[in-house]
Image 1 (cartoon, one colour):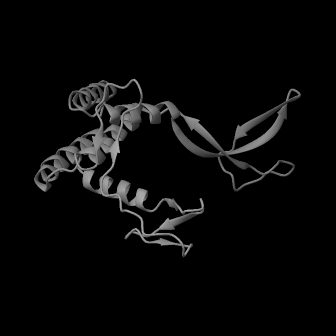
Image 2 (cartoon, helix red, strand yellow):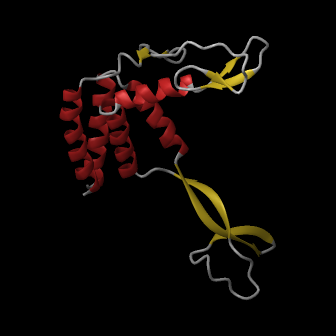
Image 3 (cartoon, one colour):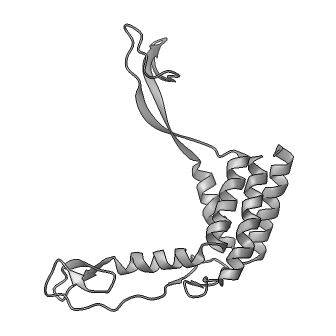
Length: 187
């Protein structure tokens, strides 16, 4: 896709998300874009004009005589426009196609969190709510739904795992559209 087409696609997808109550998806995406893409790069330390510098090593396996070995460092780079559009499509897929799996995973995570016993001791519970590690723990109540309150000052509404689940026919309708969009962006 050409750069001007990517920009139009990004604006259109963002407008769609904002206009359909998916502002939270855009907020999450904007955070990821601000962080950038984390990459592992082999760098070698050297001294130039009395200053210590790090230079990227293009072939980390080969070490010239008298040179230090390259070490791997984490670096960040900005996301390209194509990566941003692809990330937006994947985020929309997760929100529109996979909401039941997301809701189920969120509930399962909460049910697997440590529970506190009568004396403040902590343990974990299994999927049925039975505590283990400490025999004195009583059966806990299973969480079946979660309400996600928006950040303070946000104009978004509370989202419930119950409310984000869609019928299978919607998934069948939306998934091919997002697949076609992704194919077009990657062309």
